[in-house]
Image (cartoon, rainbow, N blue to C red; front, top):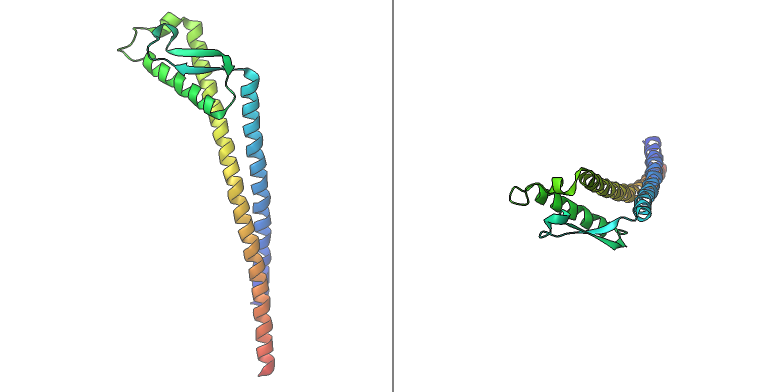
Length: 169
């Protein structure tokens, strides 16, 4: 029994160390992914975008060329504005065919930009998931290491006590 308990304690410690290493790795990967996405956003100099329901001539969107997207909140706001504008453009009660009024090239650019914003948000979501999994793995790793140490010491002390008791009888 003593041998099994010590082996179980050592195995728990080893699994805990592996979980701890993976946790640190996931956190580094999450931070690197988020930094890469935000560096791409800053390098592209995307203008801030807002939605104007009363402006069908410009496709319901207003581009603020003096400012650029550089935070996650601004990416979300731009993606929401573009999605709302696209839904409004397809609304039968709005202007008959805003896409045709914009021209094919502008419409294709619009849809491409909306897709780029969506991919950026997906990348940032993945980075958040990696960071969360890293934190979770670190907590699990520390718990397993502590449990392994407790099992190893507890089995050793139980074996010592039983030997002492056996020696007195």
